[in-house]
Image (cartoon, rainbow, N blue to C red; front, side):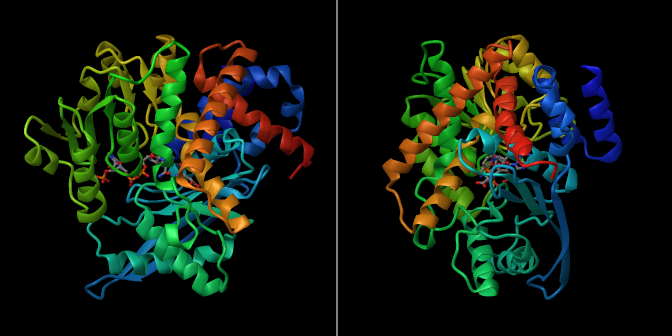
Length: 453
Ligand code: NDP
Ligand code: 2IT
């Protein structure tokens, strides 16, 4: 690392103690940008990087609610408004017991670059709560969402900050949040994305992140004159992103053999076809059950319980051609990366945010596999959120085919921008550096234009 990067990182660590995920996300970007600030001293003198790592605003608030037993519960709510240089803050809300300030800051930081890559005018933000929707009744989730929005509403707006879903926040939660916003503000606007079809949602938004990660993998494979047809794929997670990555992979002739949740993973060597996926969707989205049940339902499939004492994640040890991590951050470490490559994987497309840790990423890059980092590979979700905002502004909606076509084009543009930036800065084939640089340049130039704010 250069002295400049070292000084910057040391400052980040001192000012933001106990935020390891934020340090990890910043360090990767700073390493990619050393060559850029060397070539462009104007970014350095205007302290663009120093300003990018400091959120424009952080809101943290109490979320009190009453459970079905009549007991008072208290959770913590957050919204990180990271950067608005190129558009209103935009990014998801995560409801998960692990949520804390550092995790949301890493997500908000990555969102700034991702949103810039989409080619749409979207700034970056992220929010959420340590509330755990698992095991809660629909009414408890509604009470929680209403309390959460009763504070959040004053900080957001369709031209200010437009939240969406992430882990633990899907169509049900967005519905409750939107209902409460509309009730308080007395305005029907596109203040959230991922809305229901009948009340301002966009077709293809539920599918967009998973489909986009698959389109990105197809774009990477095309550079080697290959396609996804006939490829065996490992997918982790079994939520929104994993489900639609699996759907698109099957549609393109690939075979998905794994899925997981926080309790463990299933391996189905016969492949998770359309009928099996429909069963998984009903299990996860309606019955809200555990993925372990898959192995009881389908003969030939096996289930492996998560073992917190293992130093690796056995889902990544199965032989395959491609991997789509679609669960959560740091689910692939260096050992997992080695297992993936030993098992024949040559394509990794990150549906989740930062699922590969720093050493795993280094391993993928050293071995020159096709590695699509989350900022580029999973940008399809927020891109279609941007298209939802455009449709809301026009008070019009595009067909499924139109939105899917735009999503494909955006993913292709992101791929091209990433490849081009890597070439221009002498790191050809490195999608991590390419995505960080391409995402950075648009935001950095806007920040230069707008003065010291
Ligand atoms: P969901 O809540 O729909 O699904 C999350 C899945 O990941 C579930 O299977 C869940 O298992 C599993 N999971 C969550 N936390 C952990 C953990 N700590 N350890 C192991 N497994 C875990 O979320 P999404 O599918 O929307 O999000 C998945 C990833 O994709 C996240 O990293 C998110 O930030 C990212 N992403 C999402 C986008 C979107 O549009 N939704 C856009 C871009 C990125 P369990 O059910 O047991 O909790
Ligand atoms: O990480 C992400 O890009 C998301 N959770 C989606 C954000 C959005 O605003 O659609």
